[in-house]
Amino acid sequence: MADIRVMREDLRPPASPPRRHFISIKDVTRDDVERLLATARTLERSMEREVKKLPTLKGRLVINVFYESSTRTSSSFELAAKRLSADTMSIKSSGSSVDKGESLKDTAITLGAYDPDVIVIRHPQIGAPNLVARVTEAHVVNAGDGKHQHPTQALLDLYTMREELGRLEGLHVAIVGDVLHSRVARSLIQALSLMSAHVTLVGPPALLPRGIEAMGCEATTDISVIAGADVVYVLRMQRERMEAGANYVPSLREYSARWGVTPERLRPGQKVMHPGPMNRGVEIDPRVADHADALIETQVRAGLVTRMAVLYDLLTSGPIEVKTESVLEVA
Ligand code: CP
Image (cartoon, rainbow, N blue to C red):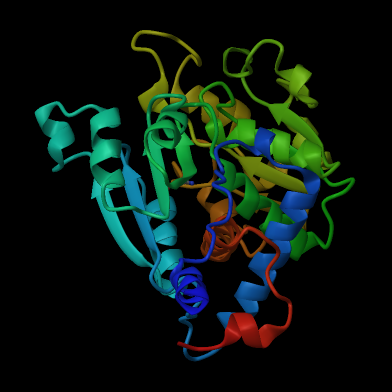
């Protein structure tokens, strides 16, 4: 009898790590960020190998659910899961049963029936990832909810800045443009503050939310201050989020003339970032976007390894083994 009991215990699946989510930068500590950045760096080294696939998440299921358009976030999450050998499914609201009126809750419950380990969700409504976390057993990653949060974008931006400039502490970042409608700006301000960087927001008065300084940053309408920053982070004019009929700026032409990031407004050697997609000639001059000091493609590459790090971290609940064999072992 004793032997049978032991056998039964041996057959029990290993205990799952506690369910964790990555929904907001507010939910993570500086130690969490340091751990994720270190994991991303280790994974980036593994991507230098000819065979890039790692066996780490073999047998796991990652479902990407996108209710809004995306190129960078959706492709990098899918590739991140594949590079870690997880199974993946990608659902876009267009062409799914959302078109027939299915609610987010019912869609989440339906996908939850496949026992996914992770659900990555982008949705126009603030709080959509929290709803998915309530009605499924999956770890949930927020790939952007309305103008609230885009935490993995902030993480990849921190990674890019530290790799390029060697530090985050004390760094001065000017975030320029449509702050009002930007989840990227909200996540990034919090993430930079957490890492003791200094943030100045720059833009037209109507696109700088009143009281935004309470997040731990400065705000100004004076575009000339960007010349004093280590990094100029340009935001897209988010016309799809602007209320119809509201006049945030007199015209796009005037916006470009007064707040567009041009070579004349930058110091030589200043790094320029943009989360994409860019409106060339509106918020960013093409000569800036195509210059060697623009880190826009570097950000895209960082998006892959930081999202791999997030998936790894959620599913293994701990720091990556720095002993490279355990991580770099090829499937
Ligand atoms: N930066 C970003 O979220 O880009 P996508 O909308 O293409 O995912």
